[in-house]
Image 1: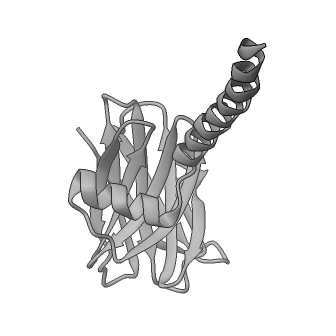
Image 2: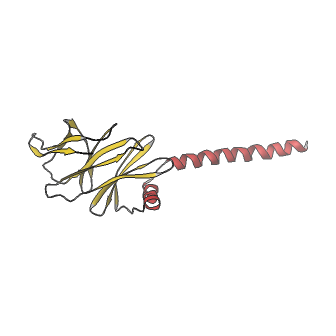
Length: 171
C-alpha cells in the first residue's frame, strides 16, 4: 500500500520533468532576434546595430547584420557562432559586394548591398542572386558548395542595362 503512494507521487513528477526537458530543448533551438544579438555579442564581441535578414537552413542559421558602416554575415549552429565576413556598405555607385567563406564549415557566400535604386538584378556567373528588401535598401547574396575562384559580378537595371560589370579573382 505504501508503494502505491510513492507511485502516485513519482509519476506526476516524472511527467513534469519530461515536459520541462522537452520545453527547454525546443526553446534552445528557437533563435529569437534577442538570442541572435546576444550570441553575436557574447561569442564574437559584435554588437550589431540591426539584424537585416535571418535565414534558417539546417544545420545553420544565417544572420546578416549591420555593424556601423559594415554589413556582416555570421552562421549560428547549435554549439557556436561563426563570423564569415564583413564588407563596407558604403559605395559611390550604390552597390557593394564581398565574400564570406569558411573551409572548416564548407560555407561559401558572396553577398552585398544595393542602395542604387536603378539596380534590380544581380547576376553572379550569369546566375540570378537572391535579393532581400531591408529598411535601408537591399541585401543580395548567393552561395555555392565550393570556394570562390573567379566570379563575374553584374548588377543590372530592370531593362537589362549593366550598371556594374566586374571580374573578381578570389584565392
